[in-house]
Length: 526
Image 1 (cartoon, rainbow, N blue to C red):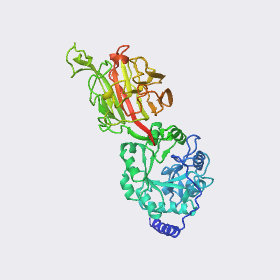
Image 2: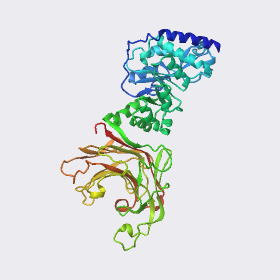
Image 3: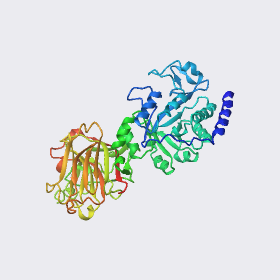
Image 4: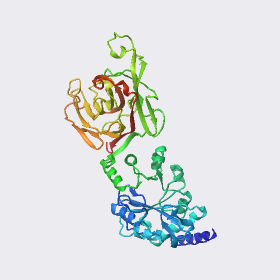
């Protein structure tokens, strides 16, 4: 491999000679979005990945970046392609002339890096180039490849067009920084902490979305260290929404059109910021810094006994599982069957269920509260996401106010309800303000249940549809007790005044409610 060392010395010398002659005539202003097209925008039009056509499509879409892969042939030609082999030929042991005999599926010739770079800086005013440098199987060659990439960029005065250099090789990135300490670099492997990246002078991280969910604490750490935050390769709507909610700098995707669409629909696009959340990317009991439990017989003459039990509330595989069971449990509040309080009349309850709450832990005035969940099934079940005013202990219900983000009753399987209760408007008087909406496959698919709550109104939302709009009448707190902190509850009730209207089907137990996330957004100036 001595020829590589000689070539490396020459390239380093060339880079040093020109390092003081950086082009300052910047011809590009990167687009103000987070969308990086992975190997170009190829999917919609069926273009070859890493083709010049897919690059031009990314530019036409206005993506902030277009990512592509760089490899080196046996005769030291830099080419743009992903795999280590091309048409059955090993790239690192084949020369360019042999490889170039095989064209891409759209008839394009196999592009050299220089040709690709030239295409990327022509008629392009907003899309940055994200250069992924593929590591060589000959480790000593990596520094030479990195130097050649920089030399080619320098030759074409293309520095202003480079959004970032990325690689799975840490050595490649460190070599890039050695040759050009102004270059933006991002590590792909996912094995380094943000603290390590910062210490080593790497500009940011570009990790798989699964890795980032596993190490979600790295997100705030990266922000605190002023590192670039990117994720690859993100194509699922729920993953895209998660990254947008956490205010990532970039999202690398095969479907840039979808990311543009999700950005447009994101609460962040309306001026919100994420202030509290649980993504349930852990295992075991729900996080006790975020959730408490209700226990016992609580309200509405419901048949379930709320318990603090791993069987009834647990986190597995990225989901909070709230589970109700048909099982007898002793009522610790039992006094006698003749007691005036129904909660003290029952020696045993016949069902167990979970009820989680943020009471005395987290509360909010105004914002967008959203839960992505799949509902439990069965006549007699009454799952709900709802909120109570923090002055409940002082003034009690309904004066404290209640916001039912979502209620569902098993005997009405195709509908959910969104409702407010107050001293003037409540179900005891029959004056509550509520509406229902048809829900498709509530037991088989996940839906987003949300409210958007301001001083002027509360909107109830299923997925992207507002189905109940309640305005502040600007009368008294009897009508609008909603200018104060509220806390959140999530529970599955069994029977009760509403859920039990048509009995309880004991054959359905146990039943699970699956919750993907809970997010609370507030306006930045709130």
